[in-house]
Each structure stands twice: as structure tokens, then as C-alpha cells.
Image (cartoon, rainbow, N blue to C red; front, side, top):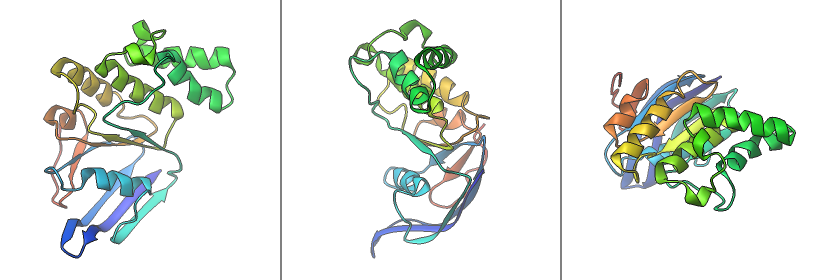
Length: 205
């Protein structure tokens, strides 16, 4: 599974160009952060990678990348449904019977430090717990490409540290994981960084 970008350009108007000449290769198990100042196009690049926005120029090749999951900076869930329900749903959609779906969901919740809140309604979760739940649900979906947009932007330092630890555990999974973030700790949790301005940023860890 590979995702290859060559000479990407995104331009909104003739006088508004976010980035130019952006080229990189991603493969299964990669955990990569996108860096750059505000307005440089990190979130827009996530949309391009997902296939939701066409670049002005350049190419994106998705070899074996079929399913995409997105973790937004504001967690979204059903207030009265439990954390377990949120993670079990992807398994149910895949055809797993309810007892098996619950068991697999419980294993993932434990992996991401959420076993204690498995039965808690989404609306009663803290910000950090809800964000970790979004990661857990995305892993349950088994997405080929996991896109994460500013996961710690609205969290307190302690919750952000926990989310960054969980993010680091996504390295080496079956997914390609791409994270857009200003947070230096989030960037450090990733294997490498890509500067959206097209300038190599080196290794983050």
C-alpha cells in the first residue's frame, strides 16, 4: 500500500497559492506529521490526500489505498451512546455479530486507555477521552489512510500529552497515518515530518 504525491500545487485564486512543488511518498505503517505556519495549507493537503479536493497541479497516486478515516479536532459522537457502542459499530458494519463486536471493541478501548469509560455515554467523556475515542474508532474501521487534523488544539496539557502518547502507538499499524498539527509534542510523536511549503523538515524523533 502506497500513497505517492508529485509536484502538488494548490491555488485558490491566481494570487492565493498555498503550496507548490510538494512531493513525498507514504507507505503502510507510516506515521507522518504535516508542519507549516497557520494558513500554509495543512488541512487542505489532508483533503487532497483523501481525494476530497483536486490539486491545482501535480498528481496523487493511491496504490491499495481504498478506505479513508478522518479524526477531526472536535470529536463527534452520539451523546447518549456509550464509548463501547462507538467502537463496536464499525465491527457490526463489517458483519461481526454483537458479542464479537463488543469484545473486539473492548480490546481496543483497553489498548487506548479507555477501558474504564467503556460504558460511559459519549456526552459524559472529557475532551481527552473523546479524542482518544475517535482514534480508537478509526482503528476499528481498519482504514487504509487515517487523517488527523490538529488533535490536541482544544485540549489541556495533560489531555494533550495522553493523546500524543496514543498517537505514537498508531505507528506500525496497517494504516498510513498523516497528522496536521502545530503542536511540537504531536510532531515528535510521529516518525517524520513533511513541511507543506515543500521544504524537507527532516526527522521528528
